[in-house]
Length: 391
Image (cartoon, rainbow, N blue to C red; front, top):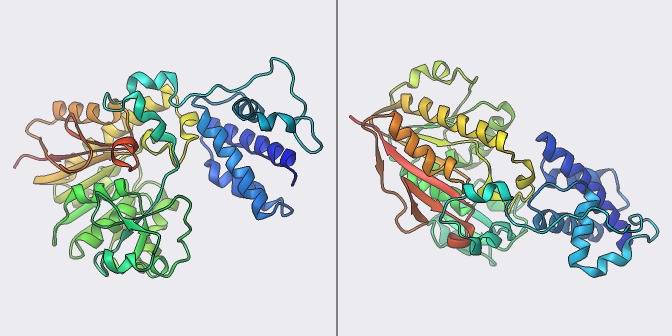
């Protein structure tokens, strides 16, 4: 592909990403992969170059662009070498005076007042920087020092005792430790959620919004003798846990839930769980460095729905915790409504529950919990709180 053809391909992909963001469809990474599956003529260098153009354009623009062309025109305004490619054979149509161009911005204007006060403007750029590859060592079967020998470019994570950090875009999926279940790819912030749970042998634990089970696996590694139930309402996501658990040699039960009947589905666990983890669906504002088009997906209406769902899931979890047991609430969000605001609202509804301190060496105190941010902690952004039920 010529440089001009690569630029045109980036425009076409961005059109698909914009449409997918509007319809809450596939993520940008998946769209790029799908695009090139039907274009075998594109070599590896072409694919890398086009992908880089796509994600540079996405990171540059906080608001959803009018079109893929508008996103690339905006990018070309910052990189004049791209301007000469418009009008070239197989490239984009020539530029027209005054045509739409996306504007550079890091955070959507409507979200700025909703960010936690801890996330100052000087931290915003870190929200969009390329993220490292973090690994979690399966400490039930091996030690971090041993696994560091397997990854010569890795270094121990600063906050998690289980983690190894590798440079961005490092490919590890086919490495032997991953295939054998000794290693899982997991951001250090996610590892800290499992650490905040502080699982103990013999405990009964529910991972209420388990997804594909990354945190369930971390809990099982930390407390192999615990009874762990991983639940979710998405059959496809939950089905991914079983082969991962088999590789890790972890015993984890799974159960598919049918909202809003979660309590009926979990009647045998009502008021009997020592620990319930609620890693709730959220805005994903803490993971923009991995999914920068997430800014294009979020709307005020969708945020309202997410906040309502979080509140409902917290109330479901509260009914499952036994007296004296704990509820750990986490969201990959930097928005006050989804973090500190949810804890404040929960404590107002639930008399006698108290906040328990966690992760004193990580993050910053944010109301009833701790806030991790890319700029302060070099992790994805997470709000985490631990709440204890009265006896």
